[in-house]
Length: 163
Image 1 (cartoon, rainbow, N blue to C red):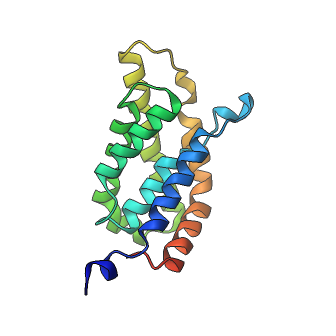
Image 2: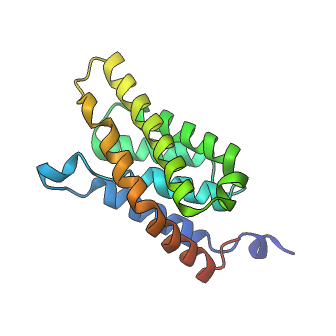
């Protein structure tokens, strides 16, 4: 089996991560901004779960840097959190893959709360003002969207024959 046959469908991974970055950068109304799902983290979790040999900690780090630039935040703030999320997902990917979608959604919510707490902690340490009460809202909205995102990305992976 040659290299091209082993690594098919890389465009699907890149496209889904690009769309997640676009959704993260898209402006939202003030009343909904605190509920914004963690699109990039959720897509990263999916690909780390589905393709642990192709998407991992390095991908999380690079996505975090892009997210920092897009949102004008402290360089590396999202990178640390997304790298940790990728690390945890890679460690649990075999268990997560066989879990029902509702259990996966709970695990995703816990990882996203950890991600948001790290993001908040770095903000506090560097003197940035952050709304502490809003840490849970993105994790909750992401948890509710996880089953649909999982099904959508699984369908994309199958149609694109990602290996």
